[in-house]
Length: 148
Figure 1 (cartoon, rainbow, N blue to C red):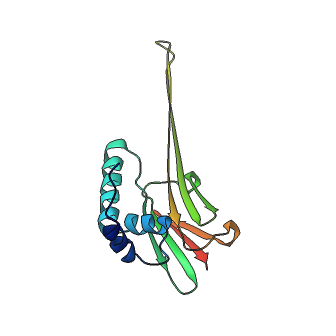
Figure 2 (tube, one colour):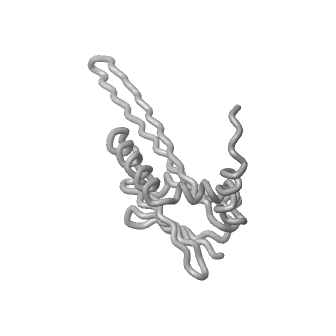
């Protein structure tokens, strides 16, 4: 294993913010504009080619609330589940399609069941309580309001 020059290591460490932890660093990288655009493009590609929705989620913060907005085109509100756990809010969609074909003249019967699920979690700066969340699903958009 090659040893790193101590001077170079000290120089790099001295340029890092004092209270930076690994989780915060990862969150900063993943929430950067280029990474978000890349993730969005992958999701849109998957939606177009896999016939399953991409969860386009944006998070904003006001003085009193965190607001999460998810665009969910053609998703039935009964298929959506929102769960708060610790600092995470997870939005899940369960889709189930059942097709039955039957022809008594030819004694043909076919039943097909397709089930898909997708979820996405949002990390917030503070712990979230399920009972404090307000959710509204209207016009293909899910809105979640969480008091600070």
